Length: 163
Ligand code: GDP
Ligand code: MG
Image (tube, rainbow, N blue to C red; front, top):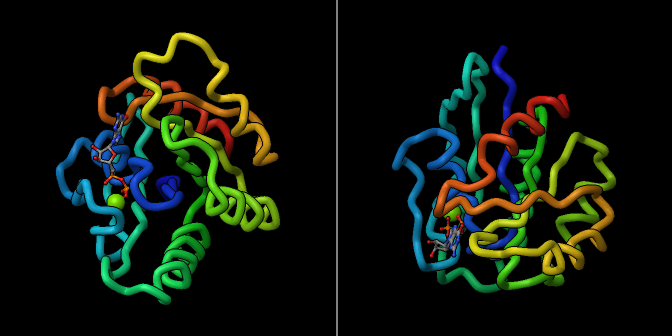
């Protein structure tokens, strides 16, 4: 069985961009609009001789208002349940948000292997901006740039090691 990696996080943090990197595909819809991905999305990935499956999340109707957070939560829960390891993506430029805390609280209760991934970290020379994400209480924060392909290889190695 290939290990399954779930990508979770609030809208617009770069989950679909990372999915494309990890699967080397253009399958996930990357959008400037939060939440365009309509449903969970599966892809195959490989690094060296290690193969894995990736699940992208973030499907809800852009115009749904009251239902957005419930649908996000449902998507996240299903993907997490199906996965062996969770990559919890946060936006190092946008900073920590209340939604990040909600997701962290959920993940902490589950006790499944989980890595915090600080995306959009291209061009950041020091680790100061990562500091606030340690508040999430899920351990180390791993800076990457999904868009620029930085930090991806070591992230996959860590994720597969965490199993
Ligand atoms: P999702 O809603 O979490 O799936 O986020 P997307 O992958 O659709 O990306 C949301 C926005 O963030 C898009 O405009 C992406 O181009 C942008 N983005 C994704 N990754 C990066 C990154 O590493 N650096 C920067 N600066 N922008 C990124
Ligand atoms: Mg998406």
